[in-house]
Structure formats: C-alpha cells, structure tokens
View (cartoon, rainbow, N blue to C red):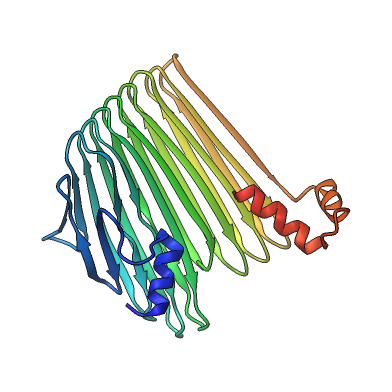
Length: 305
C-alpha cells in the first residue's frame, strides 16, 4: 500500500504498520492482508462479498481489526460481515472505512455488519468513518449494524464520523435477551452540503435488559442531519436514548425520537436538545485570548470528545 492508503488506515483504525492479533484489511474491494489467531478465525464468505469472524468461547483480551479503504474514484464497495462471538469472551473489534476520492465520480462503501453475541460475552466495537479528496466526486457511506445479544451479553458500540463524508444513512438495530446490555455512543459532524441520517431501533425483549443510546452531533454550513430512534420495551427493562445537537450557520437538524412500551415494567426515557452555541460560552473563551472562530472550535471539539 502507498502512503495515502497507510494514512487512511491511521485515520480510521489507528493502525501504524501491521496490526497485532487478528485482522483483515480490505482495499478497493479486495482483501490485501489477513491474519487469524488461535482463538479468532477470519474466513471469506462463499456466497457474497464479506467475511465471517469467529471468536471462540472464553477468548479474553484479544482484538480484531477489519478496516476498509477506498482510493479509486467511481468505486462502490459492498460487504457483508458476520461476527460470531462465543460465550464468556471479552474482545475489542475495530472497524471503519476511509475514502480518498480525487476524481469526478462518486465513491462509496456499504457495510452490513451482523453480530451474534453469545451468553455473557463482552464486546467493545469501534467504528470510524473518514473521507478526503480534491475532486468533484462524493464520498458516500451507508453502514448497517445488526446486534443480537444473548443472555447476559454486553455490547458497547462507539461510532465516529467527523470529516469528509458527503452522504450517509446509518442504520443500527439491536435485540436484547435477559440481563443483556446494549450501549451506543455516536459522534457526528457535517459541514458544507453534507447529509447524514441516523436510525436506531432497539428491542428490549429480555427481563432486566438494558439499552443506552447517545448521539452527539454538530451541523455546520448548509448541511442537514436527521436523527430517528425507537426503543421498544417488551419486558421488565430499562431504556434510555439521548440526542444532543449543536446547529450552526444555515444547517438543519431534525430529531424524531420514539419510545414504545409493551410491558408495565418497562422503564423508558428519551432526552433531546438542539441549539446553538451559548453566547456566554464564547465570551468566556474570548476573554482568555481566543478569537470567536477559535472559541467555537474549542467548544465543538469538547462537545464531540
């Protein structure tokens, strides 16, 4: 891989050289590097593009890196990745996609990731999206994440998109069995004429299941954002969703939260806030010697941290 592709890997997966542990690196629609370990097997699908990641029961403190990079204009890449996480395991999975588009055609990546998380397993999933380029073509990403949690399982999902993606439709679906937990933390920024849509649906089917979905976003310039969430409480459970957005310039942000309770023992809460940067915050930082623009950047960076 050339220097530009290596830089994309650094941006989306913090990879410097060859990753440790299990990994699969996909570049321009092809696998360019793969490694399995004694406890983690990565294999190509035979019926459609993508891979199966199989993590043995009891695997502890191991990681999997599965970044995707695109450096060809006009290329649209589609993958189906399935994760089979054995019971009582504890792993970190680092994904993400980076696009470098210097042509006049659109480049895109659609990733459909399905997680089958076994009993009492613990997963931390990190996904970053990043785009760059000096051409007229757009960078497009449409990630879909489906999470199935068995009894006592735990999934923490961190998603970040703060630069260079012109259009995205982000879909996340989760189903939770007894005593399972699904945590989602989203950070998103749009600028220029970019568009981003986020759609969360979580079904709390198990007794004492729990979900916490938090989205923080910043919309700048003429960009548009849409946030939709639905937490369904079908048993004795606890569900919380929160949408906080800073709106700047001529941007538009729409939030459509929904809670559905099908049990008298379901406890569901939603919080939503959309607003501009408070004037007193700017003034306080400007009295410390920052320009208005520098003060705005400090506030935005702290909000998305």
